[in-house]
Structures are given as C-alpha cells and as structure tokens.
Length: 487
Image 1 (cartoon, rainbow, N blue to C red):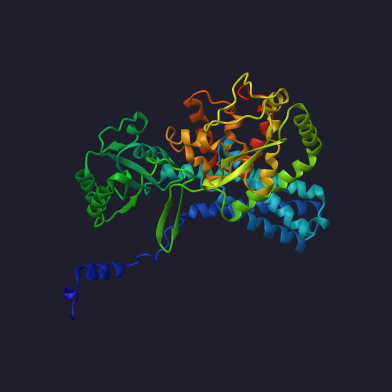
Image 2: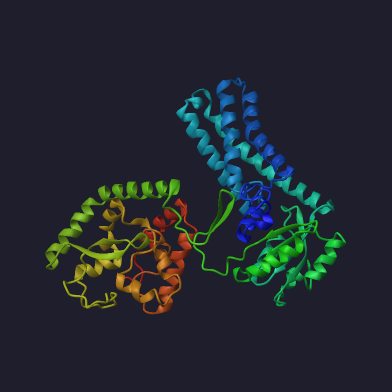
C-alpha cells in the first residue's frame, strides 16, 4: 500500500485531519485590543504617575529612588488591575463609569500602600504629598476617561472603516447579540443586517438601525458586492448540523465567520469559557469557589470569622445553653443530617428549640403556633439564635457563613422533582445565611412558589459570588432576623 487511496477510510480521514494547519495548536482565548486601547492605557499610566512628580516638584521634594519605586509599582498595578476590571474596554461615562474607575484606582492604591509599607518606602514621603497625589491622580484619570470617550466617539462618527457585520440565527440570542453590538462605540464594527431564520424578529429599536436580510443567498450577494466583512452565526445547540452547513457555505468567502453558541437556552450555573491544548471548553455548570485561590479566600474568610465570632459570642452561647437545659428535658444541641456540598452528608448543629419527639419519615417544617416548640425555643427561632452552633459547622468546614440554607434531606427529595435546578443549590457549601434569607425567604415555605423564589435567590448567589457579596449579606443579615416567616 503505497498511497493514501490504499488505506482504510478512517486512516485516510484521520491523516487529513492531522495535517490541517493550526489544528489544536493555536491558542483560542486571544485578546483583540486595538491601537486606541493601548494608547488609552498609556494615558492612564501618565495620569496615575505624573501627579506624584508634580507634587514633589512643587514641594521641593527630591525625586529619589523611593519615589521612582512608587511610580514603578503604580504603573505595574494599573496594568494589572485596569484590564481585569474593564477599564479601557467599557464606557466610563456617568456615575457607573466613575464608580468603576474609582474602585479600580482604590484597588491600585491598596496595592501601592501595602508594598510601600512592607518596603518602608513611605517613611520619607510627607502624608500631605501622598494624599494630594492620590486625589489628583484620580481626578486626572477621570479627565482621561472623558477625553478618550469623546475622542472615540469622534473617530467612530468620522470613520468609514468599521467592519460591516451580519448576524445569522434564530431565537433570543440574535436579539441579545445585536443589542449589545449596535451603536457600541467600543467595537470597531457595525451591524448592518440581521438574518433571522425563524422569521419572528420584531424589535423596533433594532429594526430602525439594521436591515433584515431574508436568507443566505442575499448574504452571499452582499458579500460579492463587498458590503459585508464579517458574519456571526448564532443558533441553538439543537441546530448544530445547520451551523456546519452555514460555515461550509461561507468559509470560502473573503469574510470573517464567527460562531456564537447559544448556550443560554440551558439552565446555566457559573458558566465560563476556557481552553485546554487548543480545545474550547464551555463550562455550563461549575461550582464557583472550591478550587484554587477562590477556595482559599472563601475558606479563610469563613473559618477566621467563625473562630472570632465563637470567642466573642461565647457568653451568649453559654447563657442560651443553660436556658435550653433547664427549661425542658433533652439534649442542649440538636443534630440532624443534611445534604452538604456536592451530595456529601453532614450533621447540622442547632440549639434544641423543640420538645423531644419522633419524626415519621418526612421532617415537618415548623409553623406558627407549633406545639412542638418550647417557650425558649420560640424566642430562639424567631431571632435565629438557635443557629449559632452552626459556627462550629463553619469552623470544621462542613458549612460556610454564607450560602444556601441546608434543607432537611426529605425536603430535598420532595422538591427536587418539582423545582428545576433545585439540587444545584448543593454546588456550594450550605450557609448559615444567604441571599435568599436577606430577601425574606426564610422559615416556613407554605407553597411551591415560595420555595421557587428561595431557590432562585440561591442560584443567583452561586452565579454572582464574590467575597464582597458575602460581606454584604453578613452585614444585612442582622436586619432581617425578625422575619415574620421564622417560627
């Protein structure tokens, strides 16, 4: 066998695949920053550093090695932080833009001060000069952001070289993509047409800005007339064969072809995009903070704060324990098995708030006037003081300070078949409090709609988790403890 024609079909096809240029070798996650964006970053660097030099010059302070070190740290921090927070990628006009820029600069200042204190760089610098630099630098950056916005707007309005693009697809993804791109001055392209395959596109705001294109033949004609430079294909995953057909029809044209997977028809949880060895990975469902640095931050925050609270509240814990012990017979601490993170089981701790009794399989939720609740237990449940022993759950790692509340196992079994994504609450550690609780979804759930509202808030927490959100929930929790649903 001296030619590929003599080889079995699967061997020949495999050989053809292996010689495709760039197959599995080209990095997928690439930046597409234009020249204007790099110029903007340079302007932010100047705005961050030059006010320090100006302050030193006006005060007669020498621009010594320590000041040069501060400038270097500032420049490095700006280049590290600003791209991560979208500075230079999003419009910074209005209060929202000012807030985003201020947060970015505050983070840079925190890095600068931390490094400077550690290296004793600030010892020779007058506090007035330091304060004047930090304030004037922020003011200069605000001016830079306004200037860049106006300049970008001017260039866009005068430019005739923006890439003309068309969107092919169906469903809500077409409208979503178009709305994000139309009149977006931060994109070096413009949407000139939408080919809605469903024929149901009806958005007056977008229809006034772009043309509706009937079919692929019309698109091909516009490509031949050099009216289109780029085509976006956005179809549901159920229409994968059609995606391939459209790509095959367009790949020989002198245009860019971009696939926008419509994954939003699925129930997503903390979704993201990554790559391994040139293979695209679209994460549809992932726990947000149990690997790498996020896990470290979450774990340290929980355990350190739980330990401090146990020490600070130890007199309260002892008083409650004595009250439970001497007002009714039974154990001080009530233990009940619950579903933990990713299906693991653990014993949740509470101060006993009920008389001793036997459950008949299904754990009945406490209701108003429940005869099972002791007098002291009624107070503990209304104020959520019965939950304080769960600080030890947090300290030992089975729970978190913030997360979805752990429901009884029988409740999980009951609701899992009735509420979509109900069990997805278990993708993070259960918490002592959560987003649902500060919104008032705590205590008894009298109907399926109330449980759905609680689950919706829990999933929102998982999708948007940050350490700052945890802190916000903890601060707001004391103001929601007297909810009418807690008994």
